[in-house]
Image (tube, rainbow, N blue to C red; front, side, top):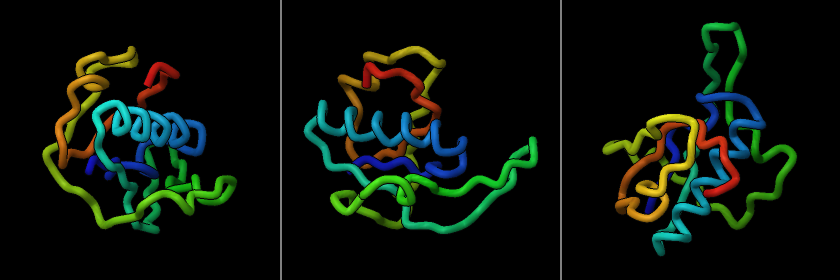
Length: 105
């Protein structure tokens, strides 16, 4: 099971769409299950944006598993480009961290 503990804390809806799609793609490519965190907390970023999970408002996520946070270890994307290493060799029981802003996942 891989997760995305920081979902809702790293950007608003557009970023969350990339993060969720990447989570699903990476999990499928590595024959792993995936989940998103079950939290309703809101944080305020350095720009004053109020961040929270927004995906379940415009999308039906009934097929998505919600869980408490996976916790570490964390797999951090190194940049804004596609990472074949993460896509092809993601270990089980980790949480992704980053923006994952590419359609390649």
